[in-house]
Image (cartoon, rainbow, N blue to C red; front, top):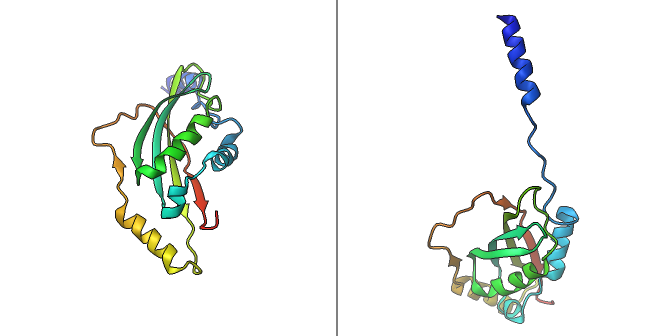
Length: 164
């Protein structure tokens, strides 16, 4: 009985494979991706004047050449936050790395755009922040969106001041 148990254990351990470790899916890794998007994301004057802040979440696919495919908005706190993020995403073409033996891989990437408030902000800036918060209209999916085998990427945070 012990011999049979030992043979079974040896057989199982020789045929087990460790989970394949995936490299970070952006050329240069996580720090390179964060820096790329901070440099590439150009906020519009409308965003800056309205002191807009919020989250934008995209799902996209990358092919084996690193090209973007199927860019879908999952959520956005307001429509004015979306165009600069789409422009930055388009600049990331050919920078994505997908796992071996896949023709297409899905990713979910959240972007956080924040207005930096300070104690020195005047009533005008405070009123603009409140006005945006009060009047923003989120974009949300009303139907089910399949995630398949999507990889959730870390949140890209872009902060700006009233001086910028």
